[in-house]
Image 1 (tube, rainbow, N blue to C red):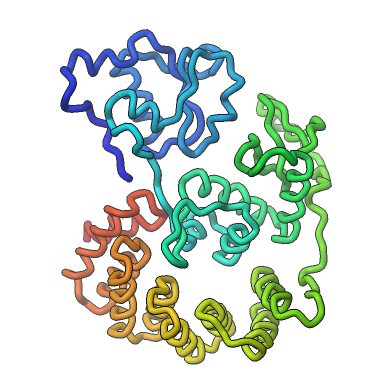
Image 2: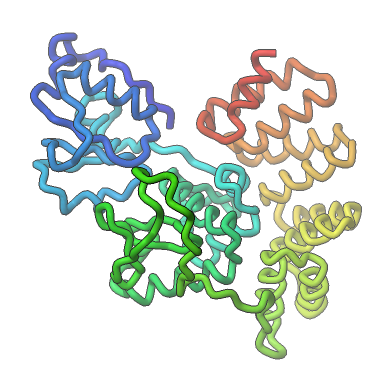
Length: 393
């Protein structure tokens, strides 16, 4: 939902401006209702004083992108979430949640990770969707933060398999936590996942990490050799499936694709398609593999096959539209995107790509409608700036 930070209309101005009178407020984490600077201004307008350190505060407000449990051990009178602050001020109704929702494609764009990595992390339970509509899943802001942290390891050069081993090490070190990636104050640094305790960085087992980076006070200090982390040992790229099982072939194909070998993944997945009656999901996966290996026409037919089995398969409709648009068949691409919106009108990705396709087809008027609708649904999307630019043209 989009939240405007305005005084509640049912309160007198004098009462509104004294909501935080006498409070020393520390703002922690990332906020989704407004930029931190705007929130700090709001706090001051309401009679509060923003302080930089939690120890100096009487009220700690944690952004929805940060686990409130991380602040529970601070010596303050009260720790609340961003949503609870806005409820207290009367900006939103009790029970509403301040959040932005991202589809896997948006999350991939935001984090810089390939879509296959996002799907792998969801399949393994690292990312937890906030909403499911059939096969369409969406993630909230906290999951987006986690995806960005994991994606930074990819940019450092760590493989997906290496990241899996990092997560497994953390889970073994903290067996009582249901989701340690969310519950622990983790940071991605030097190609590994480390625990932050104040200004100290530790290994997942709690051992203090020394000589992490040169201090800011001495920028001329020569760079140290990278400290090899136990968490980042590499393994062979492709896992070997258990012999003879269809599910093993399916998982091996997904692993090969995630590791960048779409051709080998395609051959492995054909074994699955030939052994069992394919599901809509199987046709969809095969379509993606065919497109990645340059077989666009075959991919197109597989998307149609997926939709024959499941007409409400939103992602198949979207990907079919993208394929058709890439092939220059704009009229059919528009029909595919409109079909996705017929199934689920608040599908932000479909509005975005439909607007872009209308622009390519020289139909600016319907494009404007879908740019505006996209911004209503996903104002914080990584594609929002492009939509705003299109509306200003």
